[in-house]
Figure: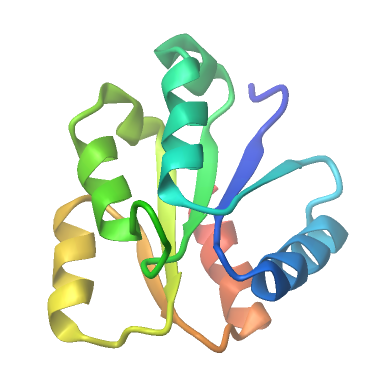
Length: 131
């Protein structure tokens, strides 16, 4: 049983991140929501956690593709090389509807792909499917 499930948000747009956190905190009151402004910050956090941490408390990652320093594709590539990926359900939230981006994200193991602007009802459904 999960003790402290986490939602990780990797989004460089502060306004978008604020809206995601606000909406999600209303729905998922008992969840810890952590925001990262780029892929490097996110990977530093994930690398500090052990596989045991993830087994006990799987994460849901909401990942933007277009971020500075390290984009979402690179994040997925790094996670795909780690055993931890199997414990992180990843939902891409991005402005890109490029079929190549979509195919690449799925090839690296993302669970869902949502284009912005975010339909929060759809996002809530997708999150429920990935729990």
